[in-house]
Image (tube, rainbow, N blue to C red; front, top):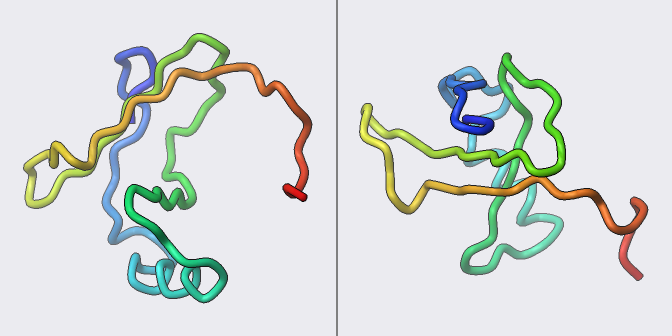
Length: 87
Protein backbone atom coordinates (compact mmCIF):
# COMPACT_ATOMS: atom_id res chain seq x y z
CA UNK A 1 0.00 0.00 0.00
CA UNK A 2 1.20 3.47 -0.86
CA UNK A 3 0.07 6.91 0.28
CA UNK A 4 0.81 9.64 -2.26
CA UNK A 5 3.25 7.30 -3.99
CA UNK A 6 5.23 6.51 -0.83
CA UNK A 7 5.18 2.86 0.24
CA UNK A 8 3.71 2.46 3.72
CA UNK A 9 2.91 -1.25 3.95
CA UNK A 10 4.02 -4.45 2.27
CA UNK A 11 3.41 -7.83 3.87
CA UNK A 12 2.10 -11.32 3.28
CA UNK A 13 -1.40 -12.64 3.92
CA UNK A 14 0.33 -15.59 5.58
CA UNK A 15 0.89 -13.31 8.60
CA UNK A 16 -2.83 -12.73 9.12
CA UNK A 17 -4.42 -14.14 12.27
CA UNK A 18 -7.21 -15.74 10.21
CA UNK A 19 -6.72 -17.02 6.67
CA UNK A 20 -8.73 -15.59 3.80
CA UNK A 21 -11.12 -18.57 3.43
CA UNK A 22 -12.05 -18.30 7.12
CA UNK A 23 -12.64 -14.55 6.83
CA UNK A 24 -14.83 -15.02 3.75
CA UNK A 25 -16.76 -17.81 5.47
CA UNK A 26 -17.49 -15.51 8.39
CA UNK A 27 -18.48 -12.55 6.21
CA UNK A 28 -20.82 -14.65 4.07
CA UNK A 29 -22.46 -16.08 7.19
CA UNK A 30 -23.59 -12.52 7.95
CA UNK A 31 -24.22 -11.08 4.48
CA UNK A 32 -23.94 -12.33 0.91
CA UNK A 33 -21.08 -11.11 -1.24
CA UNK A 34 -21.85 -9.78 -4.69
CA UNK A 35 -19.73 -9.15 -7.78
CA UNK A 36 -17.20 -6.35 -7.21
CA UNK A 37 -17.59 -6.42 -3.40
CA UNK A 38 -14.37 -5.67 -1.55
CA UNK A 39 -13.58 -7.22 1.84
CA UNK A 40 -11.15 -5.14 3.89
CA UNK A 41 -9.35 -6.73 6.81
CA UNK A 42 -6.92 -5.50 9.42
CA UNK A 43 -3.66 -3.86 8.55
CA UNK A 44 -0.01 -4.89 8.90
CA UNK A 45 2.72 -2.77 10.43
CA UNK A 46 3.29 0.63 8.86
CA UNK A 47 -0.19 2.07 9.27
CA UNK A 48 -0.32 5.81 9.78
CA UNK A 49 -2.56 8.84 9.45
CA UNK A 50 -3.95 10.08 6.15
CA UNK A 51 -5.39 13.49 5.33
CA UNK A 52 -8.14 14.63 2.97
CA UNK A 53 -6.65 14.83 -0.52
CA UNK A 54 -4.18 11.97 0.04
CA UNK A 55 -4.30 9.18 -2.53
CA UNK A 56 -4.06 5.58 -1.29
CA UNK A 57 -3.07 2.90 -3.79
CA UNK A 58 -2.90 -0.79 -3.03
CA UNK A 59 -2.57 -4.07 -4.85
CA UNK A 60 -2.10 -7.79 -4.55
CA UNK A 61 0.90 -9.84 -5.65
CA UNK A 62 0.80 -13.59 -6.25
CA UNK A 63 4.19 -15.29 -6.59
CA UNK A 64 5.76 -11.84 -7.01
CA UNK A 65 3.45 -10.77 -9.85
CA UNK A 66 1.06 -7.87 -9.23
CA UNK A 67 -2.49 -8.71 -10.30
CA UNK A 68 -4.08 -6.02 -12.46
CA UNK A 69 -7.54 -6.89 -11.14
CA UNK A 70 -6.24 -6.52 -7.56
CA UNK A 71 -5.29 -2.85 -7.86
CA UNK A 72 -7.25 -0.11 -6.12
CA UNK A 73 -6.84 3.66 -5.80
CA UNK A 74 -8.81 5.78 -3.33
CA UNK A 75 -8.71 9.52 -2.67
CA UNK A 76 -9.18 10.37 1.02
CA UNK A 77 -12.17 12.65 1.63
CA UNK A 78 -13.71 14.26 4.69
CA UNK A 79 -16.62 12.20 6.03
CA UNK A 80 -19.85 14.04 5.20
CA UNK A 81 -21.98 12.28 7.84
CA UNK A 82 -21.53 10.76 11.26
CA UNK A 83 -20.92 7.11 11.99
CA UNK A 84 -23.77 4.72 12.55
CA UNK A 85 -25.77 1.87 11.12
CA UNK A 86 -27.91 2.49 8.06
CA UNK A 87 -31.66 2.43 8.67
